[in-house]
Image (cartoon, rainbow, N blue to C red; front, side, top):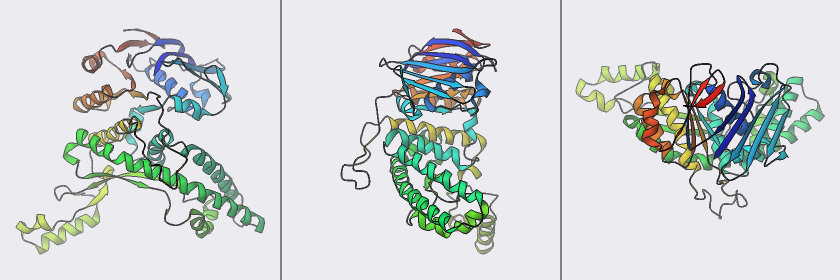
Length: 416
């Protein structure tokens, strides 16, 4: 858990120094710097901002670098400095380290903010990252495989962009890369599939609490990004002509995705589906009214196409909220008898997850907010919450006995 946080020259935060608690609430107007404080914690944990990837966009004007330093409750320290030219300096316990994953392991950070409320309609990247966040923190072997896969994928795509016709030497080079990609992809899929399987009951429990009327209709599925029953290099060879034409690799672990499906119970069907409409019309034409309900089909559809805006917010909250109990579960997910993972066990550490809730009162109704905060208060995690007004304070005091309250104004933080 973060015990003390120092932020220098990040957006309008010139110098911020705060002593933190298990629950921390930052109240302030739009543009005051509340979100920037969460951004600083996220930057320390992930090595990048959730608002903009270019450091020069969040480093304070006329400054050369932004710095975030945290003292943890176990006495350890973490620090990151981002310079305008994107140079990064990382420190763990006052010692320079050269891999962001080292800091990430020490500070698992989960973000719930307005920008994440559209992930069901966005591309697969944000949903894939949702799963990979869990896999990274729970399976030691995942990250090295993912890094190696990304390196080979970058080389392959670079070659595909250079030419539409490969020479013999380029074909040989590509074949070697494809074999490497296939090897890494098989292990990446293994890790993802195992964690996804363990995640399912937690997701179902979260749905039961946040969307109880749809508990039997919503289901989560994982797509590995390729046919996992066939070696990836075989599939890449088959698709090489099309990949050369497009200039990039269209199949593989980098295209993995999560889908939330909605299955009808004959009481609510998608009015936008032509197939559904035609099926219903046929049933109505052929059956008397008394027999229609029994004959209507069970329809499987993307939940994003069925649920209302408010329901989708609850669904996304359920997805994120369900990750924490799994991450905090100390039991080993894999047995010693597993053949594909005999040397790698759970990557679970004693690191306390940090949950960043940015302006959640604007996204969730009172009931959902109450469920979210109630759940978080019962988990061994640290929470940072931003709000435009003090209306949230009674709910905070309901679940945390000694929360820290702060007021942010024009980048200056004071006790509330």
